[in-house]
Amino acid sequence: MFDLLLHSELWLAVSRGIPVTIALTMLSMIFGLALGTGVAVLVNSDKLVLKWAGEAFTFSFRAIPLLTLLYFLYYGLPKVDFIRHGPLWEVFFRYSFAIAVLGFSLNNAAYLAEVIRGGIKSVTRGQVEACMAVGMSEGTALQRVVLPIAFRNSVMTIGNELVFTLKATSLASAIAVSDVLNNARTYGRIFSDNISPYVAAAVFYLIMVGIIDIGLAAIRKRAAM
Image (cartoon, rainbow, N blue to C red; front, side):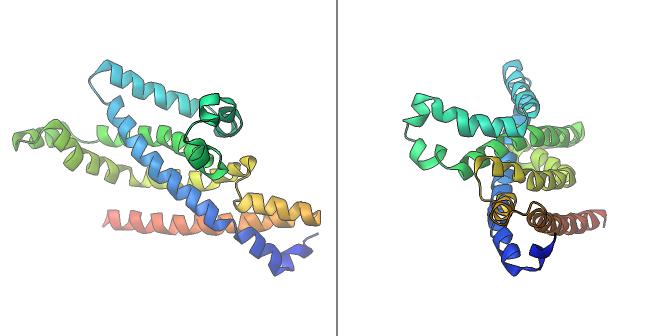
């Protein structure tokens, strides 16, 4: 039953999806964190329109299941004429990897916005008033003081989101992205083995998550010093 696990070809075939999985994870985190930070600023705004817009974004993309979002972007958007025949089709929307990055980024942004919003709330009024006292504008204080403190206070939660994103990238195989899981599934179909390839995929996910956990533990240890 597990004979394929002894074949190096299996491990090589599945491992070819690792760069795709890592790239999808990192790009989704980068874009998600950038967008999520902007949304968090909107949610913390005193202007009701901006606040409601930010809250609507976080609610929507937290409520929509990630797989549903991927299916909509991959199978639904091509049915829209201005998307299918627009300038972005050839350079973006026709590629499953790009669609996966978009979907994961939107999903991450919604969750990371909540994380960053909590980090912003952790900044004390005294710290903000000190910025105002030295002549900083609200925008400058946000950029130089509030957001750096918010990121520092949220780093472990952001790290947990990174682990979640890495594991969630397996859903990208549903839209033909050649990640670790997709390669395992393909290899399993070729050799009619529905166990060994997934064991190999699980091993690679364990290794990748383990590396992230080691990095997070080092960050936690350094922060405690």
